[in-house]
Image 1: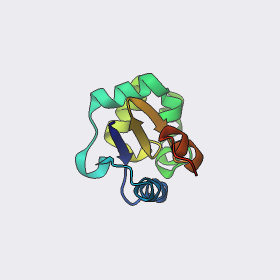
Image 2 (image 1 turned 45 degrees about the vertical axis):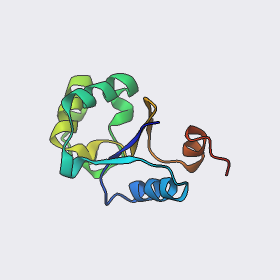
Image 3 (image 1 turned 90 degrees about the horizontal axis):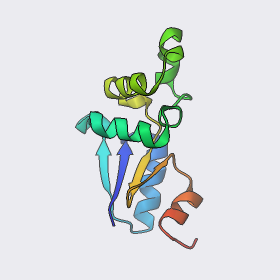
Image 4 (image 1 turned 180 degrees about the horizontal axis):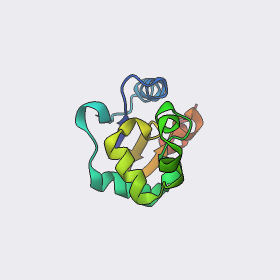
Length: 118
């Protein structure tokens, strides 16, 4: 089983996900966008698999700071460009477990993914 969690270390939602994974003794690899960057091929795959509307965090300050023209022109190509330029715009965490991708953190959803009985 392979589990990777992508995001930014200081994000509150990431901290909740880390804590849950640690409490369940689930091994994972953490990929910090701020330190390790983001691979364009991976960003394209996420947008292709999940849709830019789901991958881009429209509730965050990074989205709100974009000008209206950029927001209105958002599509798969522009989303990948924004993700590479500013990974903070990506919804966090993005969990990959056994080639399945999950956005955000919900304890019940993680419990189902990892077949944990809580």
